[in-house]
Image 1 (cartoon, rainbow, N blue to C red):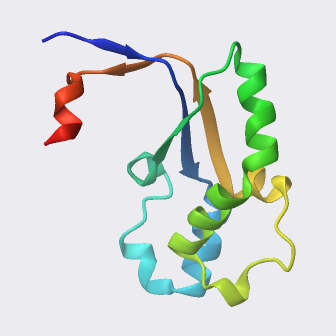
Image 2: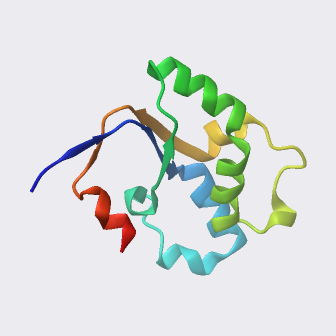
Amino acid sequence: MELFDINRVALIVTPSEALLRWAISEDPGLAEDIDLEDPSDLSSVYLLPDFDDIEEADEWLEENYLPILETLLDEYIPEDSWPDRLEFKHLEKYAKYSLTNIVIDTQDASYDEE
């Protein structure tokens, strides 16, 4: 197997305990499906543009957080329960996230053509 570097930054977003507790308060049935101790299986990965350094990726995220936050909230919380005005601080509260500029593809370019 050959490995291919992808010139992109990956953003890994995992719902925070605060979001998951809020979700369970909205729908107690979710408690059976959500492991508050290990929510890693609920993570999403977003591929961002390539940046010269991670600080640029942080800046990009602060400017472009809204669709990511809306996608996260939409997964767990009815929209009519969301804060009136979504801000970056809500992403920081309701998600644990990390950025990495090391993204490796285990498939060759033809994989996505199928």
